[in-house]
Length: 332
Length: 253
Image (spheres, rainbow over the protein chains, first blue to last red):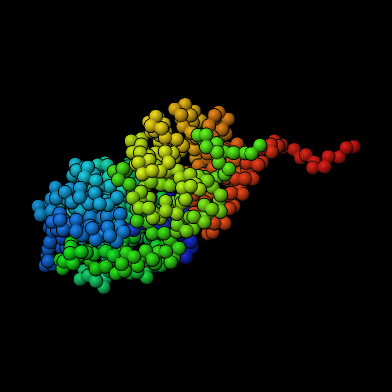
């Protein structure tokens, strides 16, 4: 499939049911009947940005906290005991209260405990990313949020995040710094998903050409209109969501796709076979939300509240093997 | 005389090697391995937890019954592959390694330079090395030269089920090899496996075509039969093709 065919599918050509059959086949061929599981670990919700859709928005008045290294280890132990080997470390954006040195320190400790460690933090310079690679980070997730510049400016009224180009070039800087796995995505609901899908595909194609040794991934974070004060301007329905996943699967058969607990349990169970290769489970989106049971502000509400064991059982019932470990420290 | 596959002085009845990825559960994997009658199964080190005796892959493969062949899937450089192989050996796995160095995570094509480098180091350290390579006859001879136990040229990219797209080069590799040639990757159906054996390949390695089939256990058996048919045909001597018809019952007029 090429970009032209992809556009046709995105804009409605071919029945969804027909796409689902092809997408399922491609996913099966490349990934088998397996789903890799990972857990997010928020270590801070401090933020100087004012993204209008986000719970960490600096104007939101939530309870702020940044975990100490000891607290991070405590949270991590809890996730380890649940079986996780792949961890995603997250922060808001505050380079003063949450400097790279602190993230590095956390990464060093976490890499001792987990096989694979990814980050979803504010954009860094190539040097900054290198520092974290040396500390053991092997994955980076950074969403563009929206590829539509006027919308980007509107939903990021101030703060360093206003710089569209700096964010857009972050995956490339991460790849150049030697991060093995780099995840992209846009926030579903900010602008017309069809436009976003085509931009994302072009972004990914260019990254694949230039950083051929990097393992790219795509995520599908959808704003849940019921659980945010933000008025979703371009809601993405379940069928459109599924069309997006299937179309991207057909254009990029070998790329891993992640699906988070932003989505409802029933929806996740229904659609994962059509392209998803990794899922989070039992997620908490506030710092100290696991073992510490802190009541700090959340980034967003989760819609799938099942425990990791329950998600794992549901996968097995569907004939899929939950994969807790798919990496090795020796690989970086 | 019994027909054995001999790799590094070890004899095997089966010419089908199995991969253990992509299965829907350890139970299905175990049953598929049994149905295939394979004796060598390869395991991705990045997928297993060497610290866990009940690991979801290693815990289901009896090391007395099968030769567990650790593979270095995920390694981008010789250095990473060597470290993975050493790690496996330090945990008591056999000092055998299916050497995979694939710097490109998308098509998973092997890096010839890094593979040769890693093979040299690992052979010197006493490993039995089975390198995964593109179907490059010169590279195959170079790897044989540094002491590899087999060469494992790809039929087509891993998991692509396209069959043997590198046929002419694999034929040259077979023609020149003094070590077993195992066609690895891209075999989508038992017919592809039979084709490899008919060409004179010593064995094949299959994973996706079995693991991702609707009925992996039945497909494992089908591959076993395909491999046996191909081998038997090769030994029986396949007649040359011809452009013109040759009557099955010649008329003696």
